[in-house]
Amino acid sequence: MIDSRIKAVLNLVRSGSRVADIGADHGYLSIELIRSGRASKVIATEKNGGPFEALSKNISGVEGIEARLGDGLQVLSAGEVDTICIAGMGGALIKKILEDAPEVVQSARQLILQPMNGADKVREWLNQNSWIIVDEDLAESAGIIYEIICAGNVTLSQTKIFKRESSPLREKFSAQRLEKLQHVLSEMSKSDTARASEKFSVLQAEVDALKKIP
Ligand SMILES: C[S@@+](CC[C@H](N)C(=O)[O-])C[C@H]1O[C@@H](n2cnc3c(N)ncnc32)[C@H](O)[C@@H]1O
Image (cartoon, rainbow, N blue to C red; front, side, top):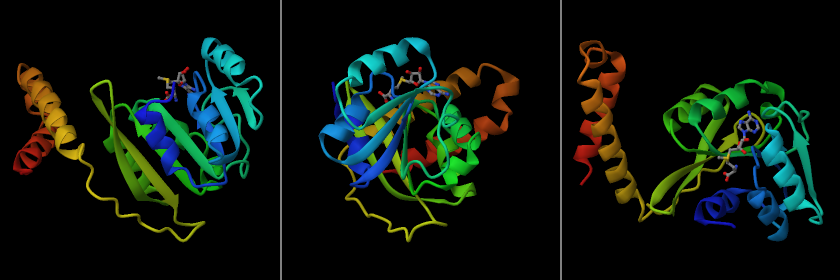
């Protein structure tokens, strides 16, 4: 079942890449990467036994996909893939997976990351390491808007920043984000300590900025 979120991830993958699909679960992204001809090879990984079984079953008969059981990028060697996709996980976990395998990450040319939350953590990590955000997209599925971040490795390739037309989903995304942040701030306001925290000020600043968007 390939929905618009997975399609948006797939559309950012460079044609002909060898791709790692980390936390592949059902394997829909991996399968579509091969079926569409976008990837030349996919290594689909899963940390958990249940999803790994489902993955192995779903990809049986699809040539070009190899399933590996293990944590994050630990089951890959440096130089095995050009593109690393990590979709459908929290930003903190995505960051940890990247941090735990520096050699594999450094040998890749492209990272495509779709955090379910905490996208700021992912952006911060990319900025602090040798990655530059070259493209971004938003996708809506079942009423939820997802951010997809595509980064290029500045040490390996000439990175071209792709200027995408502003997505029609941007306004809706900002409105959803504003609503969520306002709820978080109102909950935090109930505690004096939370209200005095740095996080409160950071979130308040983001709310103020979002309110200024016409
Ligand atoms: C919500 S699913 C997302 C599946 C798919 N990537 C997608 O975007 O539709 C997250 C998957 O990541 C797996 N996972 C969680 N932590 C992981 C890790 N450290 N390494 C590999 N897989 C992991 C989970 O078992 C689960 O199947």
